[in-house]
Amino acid sequence: MLKDRVALVTGGSRGIGKAIVERLLREGARVAFCGRDREALAVSRAELSVIGPEVLALQADVTNERDVRELIGATLDRFAGLDILVNNAGVYGPIGPAWENDPAEWRETVMTNLVGVFLVCRAVVPALIRAGRGKIINISGGGAATPFPRFSAYAVSKAALVRFTETLALELKENNIQVNAVAPGFVVTRFHEQTLQAGERAGVDFLKKTQEQIAQGGVDSTIPAGLVAFLASDRADRITGKFFSSVWDDWSSFEAHLDEIEGTDV
Image (tube, rainbow, N blue to C red; front, side):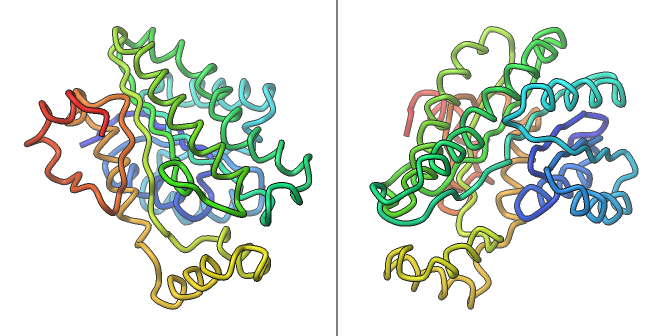
């Protein structure tokens, strides 16, 4: 479905990002991915290269403009093009009542989850425009659709990411570049270890929900990875500026409802 397409996945060395890299490789894409942890990158690259040899692992911090420029440059040098961008890199940030959050941690969360996406898009979009096509998929999630108390920085940044997605989609519509956002669902990742460590500061109800989801295994990471692969494909060429849940939206049947999807923001 994505044979010979070139994809870049930020935050691709762990969790949901790693599952997305794996799915794109299995679909035939050539994939670059980045992360901040050099050791995790090396381990993931060794594992993923067994699935598809056309994989490139790069160390980068998406909040650092120089890192972003070098990331995009290295990807273009290796693969001579870029078709798909998946903005997955993110952090949970401070946990607890908003007025008790550390301002530096709050600011860093918004920088990573929102400004980092802007910086990567800013560097990638000119290449997509030159190519005359492209797909951008932003991983949003908790707090984007409903309030997420005690995780205010995360919630605000993810909600803002959806509006950025919608806005960029309109700006790029005439360039044949589709931009969408995905809520992956409760995939068990290292984020939830932070919730357990925070204890009741995370809120009694959410702490209990986290414990239950971890015990049950949570959402399989292959589910959001499958939605990302669909949105990255030609089958989703008419879909742009939308926010989808990988768990609650029946995205496997989207092709039968393209007219409806195009005509609504719901």
